[in-house]
Image 1: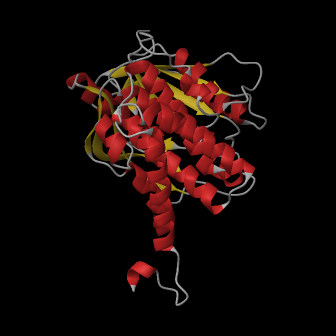
Image 2: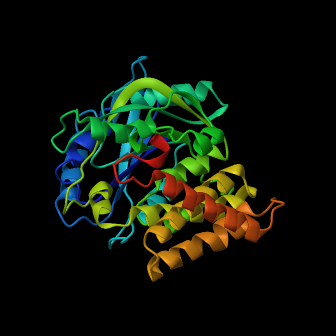
Length: 358
């Protein structure tokens, strides 16, 4: 079978959600053949058994592997597991190993707790990329749902979803400045950039144990632009609770500021090796150093000093100071003074008002 697209299906302990996710993939109506490559990371629950049952139902019926496309064509679908006997211990490694198994010209992404809502999603996105060679990928909008599949109405949670509230052409410049991303993980369809081995893509799992979407986005944006379609075609299941196994739940027990800063530092080093120092690195380096400095000024202990030193050694000395005419000492003193002044101005006065609001 000549595979046009590979679906990267990532799952671990998703027994409550995985059937809906997988059915939303297998029920896609396409005019091309596609495969589902399943990165099932040795779940401790019944996730694998559920997947095997659904695959048996879909792929071994009277008319196996047939899905009628909206334009009248009939695409075939196949599915296979990534061979694995033990848990990787690192979800991003699962993503990397699953991606390496993909044979398609295009890649689509989904995790076992999310699902697609439009049966023509893949056809629409592949059609767009076929017609627009200037784009490396395309995304679309999504709806946020809770653990029961109900649409989320909570304004505070919906503000998190605004991270992906971007329309039209998305470039590396937008990644640097906008504060928005091109789209949620389950909305992405991209060209398969990995077989060419243009860059060292092992950073996908070396940069962080859980976060892969930011790294994948970076891979794509240094090679082309992304288009965000104005259609809602997937559901992002947002669950955040103690004891949960998904990233948003596990993040409750992690130091997200340090996590984010060390991740971005690793990404900056990768970008420097791949294409040289960019303005993205300079902007991010200053931001993360500022966060480390703020933490240290708030609580000057050994842990925060080590964090500040790590951010200083690379972010400032290796990124920011390259190309600057000011001395390292001058820049450092100026940065400290700016942060101190900022802290003083924001400190509440005795009457509860900030000094700059008097």
